[in-house]
Length: 421
Image 1 (tube, rainbow, N blue to C red):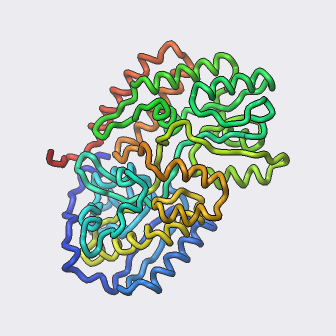
Image 2 (cartoon, rainbow, N blue to C red):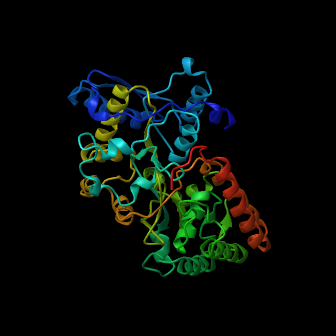
Image 3 (cartoon, rainbow, N blue to C red):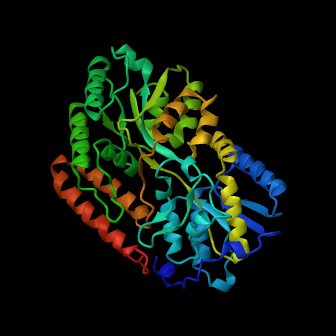
C-alpha cells in the first residue's frame, strides 16, 4: 500500500465534447475463462464491428480475479515510463479504490453527466447502483457496475415439505425454528455456518443494520449482535454446525444433505447445475430474509491514458452496460442485471430461481462498501466472527474491538486528497 500511495497521481479529467475518439485501440483486462471468455469475446467483436467511431477493443484474460489484481498492482508499482496498464478493466470496486490510491483511475462522473456522451436513461438502472464504485472520501465515481450479486438463503424445498413446512422462512427467527425442527426430525444439521464476511453482512442487514454508513464502519450493531446470538444458540443446540472445509456448506446443500445454505447469487449457475447432476435432484428456491438484500458486484473502471483513449474507453463501457448487451452478458454469466429493462428481458425465459432473486434485487438494497479498506476489513470480520463462534462470551468485546479496528483500517486506507464538504 505504501508503494501505491507514493506514486504521483496525474490529472484524470478531460473535456469529452472537445476530443475525437475515432480509431482508438482500447485494451480491456478481465478475469474470465471458458464459456464466459468466449461470450465476452463475441460481444467485444460485435462492438468492434458496429461502433461508429471505429474503436477497436482488445480483450485480455488474466484467468482469475486474483491474477488480474496482482498484475495491476505490479504495473502500479513499476516506474510510470515502464508501466503497461489497460484502458479499461473489471474488478471488485474496493480493489479499484485501492488502485486509485496510486494509479490514474478516471472519475466517471463527468462522462456520466455529459449531455452528449452520458447515460440517457439513468432511471433504468437498479436503484442506488452508483454506490458500487463510488468513493465517499473523494466523492468520485471510480467504476460502474456491470452485474450484481445478492446474499440470499437457498432452501431445499423437498426437505422442507418433508418436515411439514410449505413455505420458506421470512425472518431469522422463523429460520431458527425450522432449523431446529429439521434437526429434531432428521438428526442432521440444517446447514453449515460460514464465517465469510458477506454472509454476516447479509445477516446484519436482515436485522435492519448497515455495516457501513457511507463514512464509517458500523459493525457493533444490534443487528449483528442478534444474528450472532441466534447462530450461537443454533450451534449450541446442534441444529447447525460450523463449516470446517472450503465450500462444504454449498456442497452439502447441492447434495441434498442440508436444508439451507447462506450464499451469494454469484453461485446460482453452479448450484443449479450441481443439483441437476446429483443422484437425487430436489426442488429448491432462493429467498431473501429482508426486503433490502446485501448487494455486491464487479465494476468497470478506466485507467486514464489520454483524452481520446479515455473517451473511447467510456464509449465501450457505456455500450457494455446498455440494456441488450447487459442482458446478453448476464445470461452468459448467470448474474443479476444492473438494468431494469435488461432484467425484464431475461425474466421472460430465464430459470425461476434467477427470477426470484431478480424480484428482490430490482428494487435496490444495501451495497457493499467501495472503499480500499474493505478488502482487509472483510478478513477481520471473518476472524472476529470465528472467535465469537468459538467463545460466545466474547461477543460484546469482539464486536467493539472489530468496529474500532475496521475504522482504523478505513482511515489508514483513505485517500490523502479528500472531497470538499
